[in-house]
Image 1 (cartoon, rainbow, N blue to C red):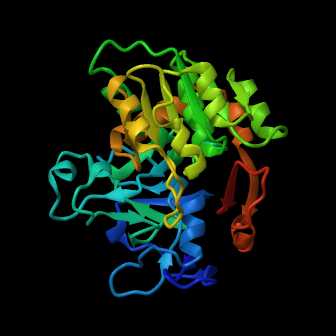
Image 2: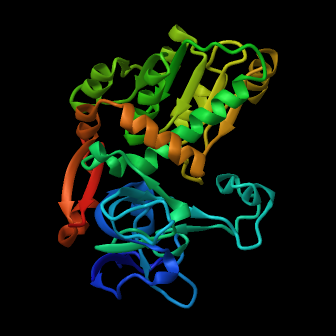
Length: 349
């Protein structure tokens, strides 16, 4: 069968190749791949920056943003042929840390987890794939066109879960959230904010096109002013940072109202330096009881929450997040960036 493969650590090795049918060791559910989302992580693996093939091999089947339809499911698995599903990305260490042992593998402390399509496990970028029933999430049938957004939605579902857990350390009735970045993570974070009844604001550089329209049609307010100015005007209760750009990250720290929460979901590039008044930043954080948290990946509960959020969302709006669909045979085109792209998807059918 055809699959999207890469040799981790080797730039320019991305290819669509013939690979064996999926090994039953990968799970009891046999799934027809429908779509695969492409994100910055995939592009970095394709560029040779990181990633790891399964032990004993030098080739990795890429892809962690999955959507498929069950072809075969054993009796008692809880799934049936025809179910629309997505696969969880991370697996705990066989000798798990305390967090992994409690099902919170997104918070792994020893780093020996594995991840489908990223670290030591083949991904979902193939015509057929397998997944363990305990790591599969059933999606509402209405999500056949947009269920590929499941994995990024799970990431923001975790971010909101962490924000709410931290907020409940004291009286917490947030009203305003600012999201920095109008990519898939930022827009989906804004969607979950709207679903919570909050006053949602999104900040991004572009001034026209689909991103401002998507924010407005969601019911949020769009801003292209410098993030420090927006935060100074709004003094939000919550900031969700989804760019990873240091010039955006720094103003968000301490940019909330008193005992506000800043959640960092974007991953910054190393090796870049900038000046900051550390004393003033420390003073603001301490005197206002502010919190800054990092959030990455998701566990099964977050995937379940994401499935519910997608099912409750406006289907037409969700569909507009998928801005380009590329057939698997032309996969390289999906790895080319366009300023107006939100989510690029590979059609595996």
